[in-house]
Image (tube, rainbow, N blue to C red; front, top):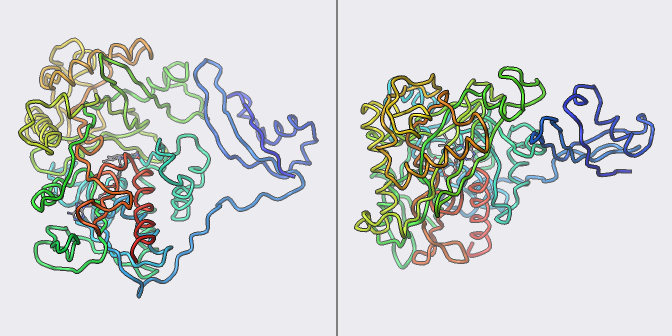
Length: 520
Ligand SMILES: Cc1cc2nc3c(=O)[nH]c(=O)nc-3n(C[C@H](O)[C@H](O)[C@H](O)COP(=O)(O)OP(=O)(O)OC[C@H]3O[C@@H](n4cnc5c(N)ncnc54)[C@H](O)[C@@H]3O)c2cc1C
């Protein structure tokens, strides 16, 4: 017999061995030796009050064995001679489109401007240590896309857009820990992601797909409302039947290329701001109601989620990374862009998070109207350049102590940071446009009321968090192709249909299903 239960275990009880077995037996009023196994379906932590609880949803197996943990069977088969689908971009959208193609009996041919994960790591070292950005190989471009050297948080709100469980199970199939199937806020970690990405590459190649690194889409030829061929690295022409464009939100050259071909796009609202960095021990102490440095070993490094309405605008935390690093996520030479990532153990001594303000492209960017569909992009670029200049034009990021930022004074010294290229003290409060700076300052004060000690001089504010989502949308019909070009399928975050790893992966799968259903 199998019974589903919800169990609450206090932090103190959680230290006892086999406590779940014991609690399940007590709940069902049966002897503990009758419980064959307790399988955790979901685990979360309730730390709202000083008494901390672990909440479990479990299946209890009484005189019965638990089944295998994966529900899905990934039915990969040889597609080396199957109809071809070309996919530009090997981020989550491109990877999952390719995997789905193989399941559906189609041959994926992936074109990726960056390098494989190993070679890519050398370019990341160059960025961090020599402050040199390779425009084709960086934190956004290369095998696995922006998702590889990320936090690997797998939380998504896009539950209606696809089968989240299928994506998680596929990640486990390719080497992620099964723990992601259980945690309420699953996370893989930047040290584990490259292996998962490599395993996905191996599956694609094993079953007859192709992946071409160092191959940038530079042009395409359209005939009779169809992309007839694509041009790689300005030299090689390849004929295509179906083209998935999954190039992410940092491929600005792709937006320009589409514009040159008069492919219709729309400006879209997005969010921008800064990253804030605190000592992790302080965040643990606030969230777990314990003295600094005395977090219980069973508790993971604490996270937070903050939102404040300032006037007509939401100001919210974004991509919070407990025990993480702030990374230079620029893709071009004269820009400073920050983002965050963390290793699987989240054991670095800093907690960082984007704190961003919604930017409404219809009402906030009047000065940028002349850029038409590119107005949001132009605003992003301007801010990234301002940050570059304020940081000293060498990839150092402009920064200020949080309290100085809010009170409007330059910081005479800064706190220690995880951002490897280094920080430069700069008056971010006056550099950021009012629409962002003023709202951030009000929100930070309010956060300090909601989460006492968050508002502290021990935190740095670091600029700029500018690439939270794409400022442009590439439209598509109900059949998921572009309205003007019937074999062009815009996908993932760069096209405006995803906001993270899981939603991009689901979008890639959907696109491939639409192609299979439609015309092959
Ligand atoms: C540092 C960092 C941390 C992040 N942390 C998280 C997180 O914890 N959780 C989460 O859900 N999301 C996170 N994100 C966001 C997440 O990575 C993206 O939402 C996701 O990767 C988008 O997937 P995508 O496939 O649409 O595009 P991308 O991942 O951006 O992939 C696009 C790919 O296209 C390639 N490409 C671009 N132009 C061309 C061209 N002309 N020719 C050929 N190839 C091209 C690029 O090299 C890239 O590999 C993070 C992002 C960064 C940068």
